[in-house]
Each structure stands twice: as structure tokens, then as C-alpha cells.
Amino acid sequence: MTSFYPVLNTPTTAYTVQNGCGFIDSAYYEARGAVHNACDWNAVTGRDTDLGDPVHAADTGTVVNAGWDGYIGGMVELQHNDGTISGYWHLRDIHVKRGEAVQGGDLIGQIGKGARLSMDAHLHFYVKKAGVKLPLSYWPSTHMKNRAECEAFVRQNYHHPEEWLKARGAKRRIEDLQALRGSPMHTLVNGQDVTGTLAQYPAQGVTVDARTSKTEIYINGLVAVDLPALPLK
Image (cartoon, rainbow, N blue to C red):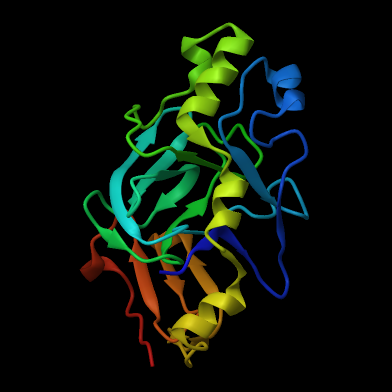
């Protein structure tokens, strides 16, 4: 079993938890009046520079929830072998469905800006403790206005996401995923070489993940037979 950070550093892009957006971050509460049950990952270049960037399964597990919220945007939850549930919010695209088995490092979605496109692009990542049953879109501060009570609830029901990843020895580079799954193979899409990249074709609703030896095509909201040919080799 191999664990990965939900966003992976590449030779050209690095990710960090945004300032003031850590787990139970006092600066987050002071700015928004809410207790943060997660950590928000963003490219170090900031703003919307990571819009559409890949979001990876943090560990092997099963998709127990995948859906859309009118404010949050795309949401996915994975239940892992120890019962913990990792959550991924504000996705622009979702590449998995409920009941699907995934491996650590699998592409499960892409970073978005929320349903109203009102946020800076980022990934909101949380981990529920084993046995915790809360709705997919549950936001603790909506239900508990007292800060101390809400913080105690979050500590009781959620793991610190970064500590959870570190305890699992999570890998954080695309090279680590390639070492496990093989280096990129030569991939052409309509004559264009996309080897080693996450190639996106928004007009067709198509994403081609050609970053490892296993090239995968993801289609959102369109019927495959209506799409242009995608020759791969």
C-alpha cells in the first residue's frame, strides 16, 4: 500500500498549504468566522495558477461519495482500509464514481474554484476518523456557532490531514508515482505529443493523463462516440 499527497509536486509546480488555511487555523477563524476542518492546498504560484491541476487519491480505498454542491463544487470521499475517510472539495472535474476502487495516487479529479467560481482555485482536503458518519457537504461551523465547541468537535471527528499523510509515509512528487507505475510512454493525441503531461481539452470535456506508463482518458458530460478521435500509442 502506497500513500500520496493529494497534490503532487512536479519539476515545474510545487504545492503548499495556504497561509491561514491550515487545520483548525486561528487565522482562518479570524478571517472567516469558521473553524477549518481541513487544509487548503494551492500551487506556490498562488491565485488560479493551479486551476485544473490533478487531484490524487491519498491512499488505496473505495469511493464512498462523489457529487456536486451548488457552492462547494465537486466533492469526493474515499474510505480507506483502516476506516478513515479522506475528502476532496472544490473539484472542477470528478473522474471517479461511487463504489469504484482506487489505488493511492490515482487521478480522482481536478482542482476547481467552487461551483460559483467565486474562490481562488485550491484543494480543500480533510480526513474523517474511522466510524465518523457525516454528510458529504458537512461544514461544522454551520451547525456549531461556539468556537470552542466547534474546535472540540473537529478534533474529535477529524484527523489533522498533514499529520495523517506523514504517518502513512505519503509520497509527494510525481516522480514517486512514476517510480511505482513506470515512466511516461509516448502518447499522441490527434498528432500532438502529450507525453508526460496532463493534457486538457475543455471544449470536448476530455482530459488525458499521460504522466505515467499507463495513459488514461477521462470524459466528463459527453458521449465518447461524439468526440474527435484520440489516437494513443
